[in-house]
Image (cartoon, rainbow, N blue to C red; front, side, top):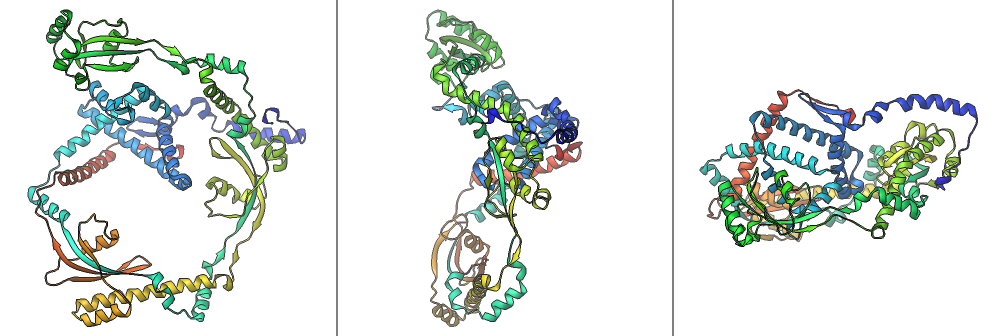
Length: 613
């Protein structure tokens, strides 16, 4: 097992040599280990540095989401694109933040609170949930303060964008013309021909197939392929070797009690008004026995709670503004406070219920404790184990590595360099000069944060020219499709040209000979799904018919062709659509925004250190 790894040697001389080699490599980049990612600068905007820690927090969230959505389609190239996009976005925000600061834009705590509480992600049964809010932030690696500071910055920067939107305009006459074009409807018919329906109607000469093969031999190679032996060190493998006993688990529980505690919560109502005078008046009414909920519904300016008698639900420390929180967490159940001033106005608080802080019992969290304990144990040992894996792979055979580290020696199937069946780093290592040509073990390859492999070449199959017999049917089909495409292109062109020149007899002859009929499409808009989107787009690109119909022949990709017959065009008499106006104004303001951003970039000293990303 991994917990009882045996250290075998191959002679003291080998270890002296390895030690001399390891020292400079261990020291290389050691500054990053001591200083941490927070001190590594990946970009600078007029002296305002962006740390690698901040970059990784944003990048890793985006990367994790894309990997879940794309799976194997998330390639190394895409990973680099996401890195560059992330740092560019962060630079843009810093530039805007500096502009917002110069212009004096600010976001108040009230605006921030309203924005966060309106986010459906943080709602439970339609209401803002503090517990869900904190849980989602924790799962995404954010502290409350960090997240709220980020939101304040973004809300402040967005004020700039909204101001551009407010300054954009469009004249009524232009809007009417655009509305008319947008609402236009067209009536048409079409005939669609497919290569598959005509491939068996064309004849490919044997000589043409041979000539194509001789002329295009470079297209018909079976690429070099390799099979590799490899060992894999994984999170799961290490976890299986970790034994958890009750004593260790209970000690871990004691150390991590805070993780399993439920904070004290308080449930309160409040009435919010602007003036101290009005707050004192309401306070006097409450002392005379008037109903708190009715007064809240009548006077409170907090639109989010007034209709519910001022009920704020349960909340923990750190949710409310400081002055409100300081009072609410010293009150007794049933107590009503005197007026309290905050940035929002004057509050009168009624404390209804207190849920004391509790800690979940040991037995109720045993499974979660076991998982956390195992994860931490794996993290503590994984660096040492990967270091040992690398050292062994450098000096020993893969069989010895597998034996000493109790890992399974596996062999892959044959794969080419352009395969999608393996991780790109796995393939790159297999085709590296050291592994492919020198027959050495690879270095440790980190496929993911919890999976590491070392590989070596098992077998190689050289690139070879495919024989004519192997590719004859493939070439025949390719040429048949090419001839069929030319054939259907000629048909649609002849039909369209004949109708356009008023030779309807010739057009009908082509149609009858090929058993073609029109497919009628009733009035459609630009977004209609009654036909292929490419056909709809082509129909709306045709000129408006004056007398009779307009005919057109159109090649629809490599395997289809169509004849189009545009019969009529109409524009409904609609009132100006506010949504269209907003969309156009948004596009205009977006272009203005991009232009302003480009100007800001020119006038700002920006450095991006891509090699540090």
